[in-house]
Length: 236
Ligand code: ADE
Image (cartoon, rainbow, N blue to C red):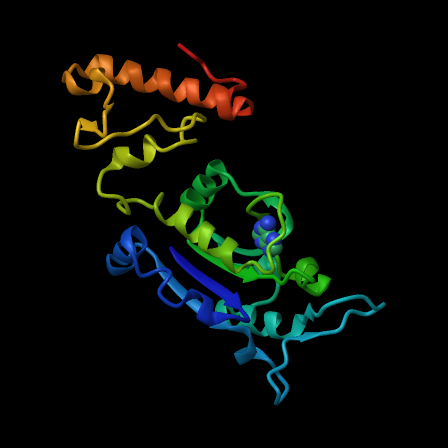
């Protein structure tokens, strides 16, 4: 999968994708991540990318021109209907569909090329949305100053679901949310830390009992913290 990120703050991404699973996935050519400075696509000599809003108001609005130029440069067209199969242009903004594990899975399964436009809090010229954007995505009901942290969240969540990105196929399946439940608690050595003991069941090697305990704890935790996730879950 190729992920292109369009931003006015390319330095924001320095090193952030150079650790752990993302780093390994890049080295193994499972994912290619490219950061693009929108100023490089500005047509004026001052490399201007934003301007004051028509109609007045606070802040600056990202201009359409550099974003159109960047998309044209990346996929050879600004016609949404001519985007190649498996390509999506995503605008990160608080107005979008809320990003969840199911959305990460959908993108990991169906897409080959994702272009992430990092919007600014004050806004992006609506003609970008009208003409270019396949979908707006929000990472939650709160307002960030820009889409950059959201882009990192998407890259993280999607990359780990790509085939062979994780060491073992089962690790992603056991994650929180992959079966609509929160994850169960985990422990490692020592078995007794400052008098806090690891649950006995995890030490006895009985795998059926361990599985049962994990399922119960996951359900308990979900019940307590995220009851909303339990609708439609078979608790057997
Ligand atoms: N930009 C500003 N707030 C955002 C959010 N909640 N999700 C995605 N992009 C954003």
